[in-house]
Length: 379
Picture 1 (cartoon, helix red, strand yellow):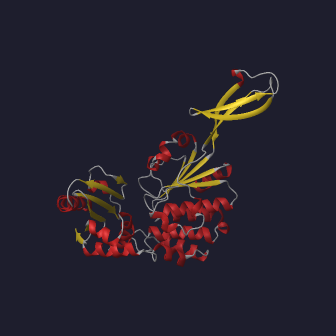
Picture 2 (cartoon, one colour):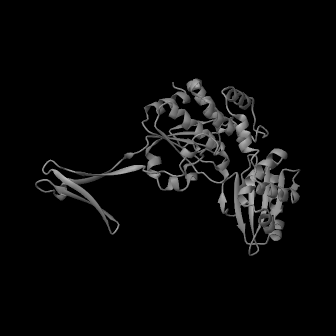
Picture 3 (cartoon, one colour):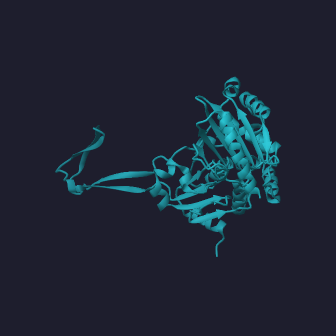
């Protein structure tokens, strides 16, 4: 019986055009891991494209090779073919025009004429015959990419690579390793078993950046001996560690650093430092010229410096006496188990809510709820 690794590469070898698609909503290691797989398959002479969400948050990974090859959406997924039977009349000229949102093909016969029954149309096969997903627990999390192309995902073979316990195993091949600290670790061993000689320094750099990001530069609680071994081997394969550290940890802009000071100044802890809370006023953002997107880098710093923390709650004052609440889960806790109101956006690891109360009222009501629910979850 073939192993999962053998099944994966057998399917890859049979495919003529491959799509790699990732989601970075559970961590940007999905981006760098998918990029490593993309580079490996290109080097192996496969036709492959890569799709995933690129945002301000992922810009720190723009130093990685072929980052610009990542598309935010699917294009030219399926052709539509119009066929004309020319057995009874030859073609002299073909033109087209657009009239009232209709595309008209004007075909002039060389002799004879065309009849309506000579014309037929059909949808062509999909552009890709294999999908490889990285870091996607459920296809619906892809949003419009999935919603607008449900038939494509339903009819195309999927290889699903992930390390999340809540993965829905939606693929025909599901390679889910719950013991891996990152998706990069999974893909490293997958590629290594296929052909370590094909892992060049660019591929190794992508994989190591995924491990470093997911483990907060080896300071998180999810480290295993296998993680250290994979990292050591990647460095021996010439992964550019200093370049990774410089881009991920030594390139904080001045706005983020200023906001970091405000966060620390207002920081308080509850539940034996398992719950970290901070409040930010409107002037904290205007005076530092920062935005809420800068909070992501700050949360990373909190994770590193307060390893016992499980949840971070950030209350941000808004205009018209409203408050935005950001909840970040640092462990296995689902933020929706802590605060069940309908979220503005987000996922189980981080989400935000817009609350129609001023910051003091909102925080005084919500903090006790967070403390009680976190205590119950930890009991």
